[in-house]
Every structure is written in structure tokens, then in C-alpha cells.
Length: 287
Image (tube, rainbow, N blue to C red; front, side, top):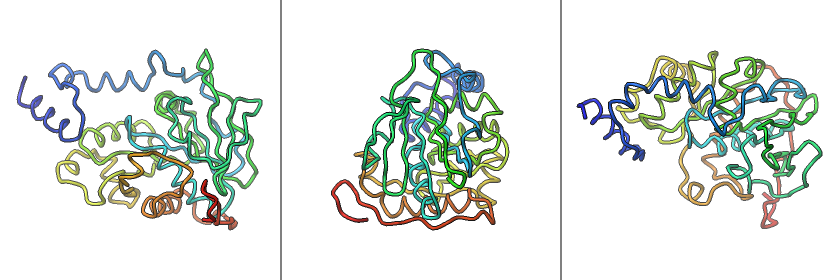
């Protein structure tokens, strides 16, 4: 193993990534990432991805992970609740049911509709998730939304790979890319930012002050996003990290990050009517 490979292995171990890092892995890193974006066995074919502006009357926000395990579901929920303070919001989860990070997030379940969406409510939010995975990998059409409603899409990792391979799928929506604050994470996120183009907002899950090693690993697009105020820190909550998303209220620090993201993705001058902010959690307590 060469010195660069050994250095990469040390960085990966510190970041909690324990797969072997070899010269072959380093040499083929870019090719492997490109193949992942183009889709592989077990991932939906991008030709079947139904994402688009059809059925979305108001603002559409697509939340994608810069890498696997970024924490996109938590960010999507925090963002949706932040946007819900100014109007009606529909949170759509494209993850496979077995991999959904939002499975326990609704406080009220409303059943499965004819299109194959499992519908629920979480305070002012409409939360819809895939009820099952189709045999051909096709995804149901996005639910119709009110003309002034905002739709936040938690793409899920498999669907994210398919969406990134189809630039037409990203037209007409705001983008939030989620990353962890580690060296491998920011390197992978840089490639996603290069793929999506434009001015995506970045949600950085981890400390507000980045370690120098992480800062030094940022590519030009991530550096530009940081310098122009398009990176929002999302603190790690240990309890939330342990139990996952439930019907309970989000930690205050995570909710605050969601409001900060909402302020960045809503175009200036877009009218937003106020929504009812109080809601009841699963324990029946008014929030």
C-alpha cells in the first residue's frame, strides 16, 4: 500500500468508514462514482423516475444526499417544518418503505391512496411515503398539490442516483444537497454539486466549525457555497441519531437549521401565508 493509500485509510477510519482503501480503489474512484450515478442493479431506472413539475403548483424543493448516510430525511423534515410556518407543505418520501427515514415521523396515518402513496399528517405537514416497491422499479406519479402549496421531496439514495443521471428531472425545483462534515463526505458531495449545477443550498450535518482537514478537502463548488452563505450547519443530536425520526417534535437546534434552510430556498418576494404552528404530538400534548 502506498503512502497516499495509507493516508486515505487513516482519514476513512477517523470518519468512521472501515472499508479497505487500496491503490485500486483510489485509481478508480471517479469511475465508480460515475457508475453509481448512472444506476446499478437494484436501483430504479431513471427513465421511470416521475419527478417533474407536473402536479406541483407552488415551490418544489428536492432534498438529495451528497453521499449515502448523509441524513437527508432529517434535513427534509426540518426544512418542510420550517417552510410550513409560512404556508401549506407536502413532504414526499421516495425512499423504499424498508429504507424510509420518515416511516415513524407522522403523528396520524390516513391510509394508502389509489396511486400507491401512504398518507399521513404531522401537525401542519402532509407526509406521503411509498406504500410498496413495484416489481419494475417504477414510482407513482407525484400527488397533486394546491396551487400555493410547497412540495419537499426526500429523494432517498437510490432515487437520488437516478435523478442525478437525468438533468431534466432537476429543472424547475430548488435543490438542497446534504453532506456530513468529513473528508470522504465533502469529496463525494463536490461531485454531486458538479452534477446538479446551479446554486444548490448545502445542509452540512455536523459541527459549525469545520476541521482544517475537511476544509482542505472541499472542491471549488463547495468552497463557493460556503463563501456565499449557501451552507447551513445542521447540528447532530445524539438522541435523534439513536432513535431516529418519530412523531415527537424535532430538537430546537435541528428545527432552527430547518428554518434557516427555508429562508434560503424560498425565492425573494414569494408570498407565503401564515400556517397554524401549534400541533399535537403522539403523546397528545399541544406543541
